[in-house]
Length: 121
Image (cartoon, rainbow, N blue to C red; front, side):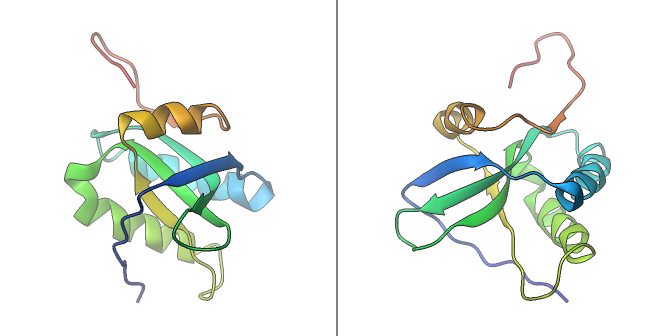
């Protein structure tokens, strides 16, 4: 069973979109998940680095959804685990407004909630 660890970073650098055949399949599965959570407004799959930790990671970066984190995080983890080996990992980020601007400069979102009046990312 996968577990989630919490980590807070002073700075996340968004490098580029993570995309490929398997990643597109994962994105399709994640879209199905996000449709169940009305609090998720958008999602990106990106390569990132943290100033405190060496190396590059892959992350699903979410706009909204924090209030459903206890349900969303393990559901995303299970979907990821169905595509990749147990020794692989993917971070899950809940973006703040400045991070939303930063990630949008390097990647396109693969999920956007259905717009409605007053909708904003």
